[in-house]
Length: 195
Image (tube, rainbow, N blue to C red; front, side, top):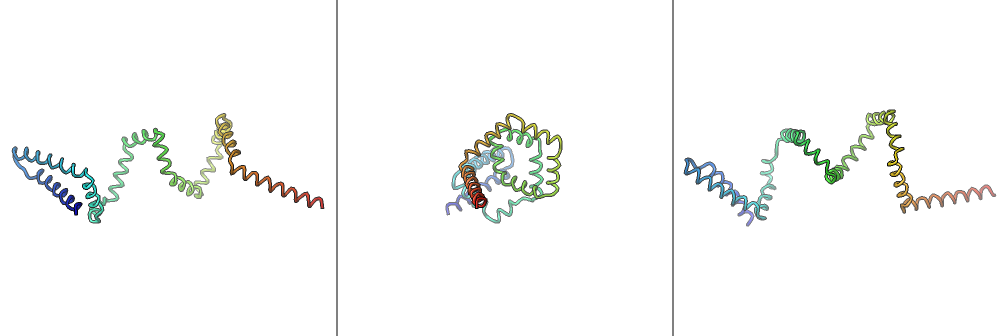
């Protein structure tokens, strides 16, 4: 009941704003209209900032009739988004945003599943496979990869990976299991050869 009363009051204030903006003619009327408009505007803004005002607006926005009115033309939305994302301001924004390591990390994490799906789909695509093989067989690419693998930085990274792998409890358990199987098979071979 309280929310409905606030909603009615907010809607009444909106109507008052419209009336104050449109109803007064002449110099004296315009000055009075401007004062009424400013006061009404301030009151509406104050009400909308309250918890009850916010709740009332949320309820209004959930109304199916209102939602229908707010649905935008898809083509217009696409064009607006495309123009916004490809504008010079947007390019500058994205360039600056991706220079921030935290933003780049959170963006990468948010897109991880989409990127993985894209890569899996691409790996199944024969045209992509052919292109990837072509890139890997390119002499310049092979030369670049060989140089990268010979670099001190890559060797340090490889050493770190090997050390981490060897100290991993999972790897140790697998190695132990493999060695035990090999010892058992060697023992069986000796028994067969000895008998």
